[in-house]
Length: 201
Image (tube, rainbow, N blue to C red; front, side, top):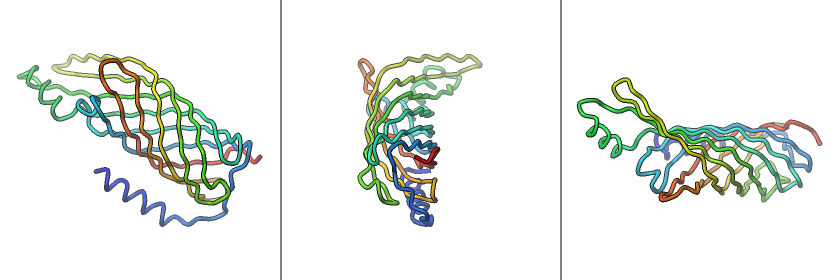
């Protein structure tokens, strides 16, 4: 599935979903969320990895009607780029090489909602944390892997729509930059979201 088809499908879903029971953001609101979508590598990481798929879990606490602070966990998996795959197969000839990259992000974030009192809420998000990235290769029944963890930051935009009195759907795009040495390990996550209120302040 291409990025264009994915985004078009999500937009159609959001536009066709009936909006009901606006649930305005309140101070003290605790909200959980999960999401899934694409992870698009950039920089040196984009030379080695293909666009992958990923998911997230998020927990936010509203410190004011417009601002939340939260924690997040994200997991992405990427295949090898065509160029890297060809180079590895050449080195391993007559064998072939299977491989992939995974990225796990453990972080905190802040969201600022521009229209917290409405049923449609665009927002800005920024955060940071620890990124663990791992490369795994297998050939001829032998596998090897290498992993490392570094700090990183991220920022992006999103939008939530009320789908009920305590449930919301949305879309979020975030740029992630990991502080790796001698290379740029960056990616963009584009994910459809489903969130739900956990309390009634």
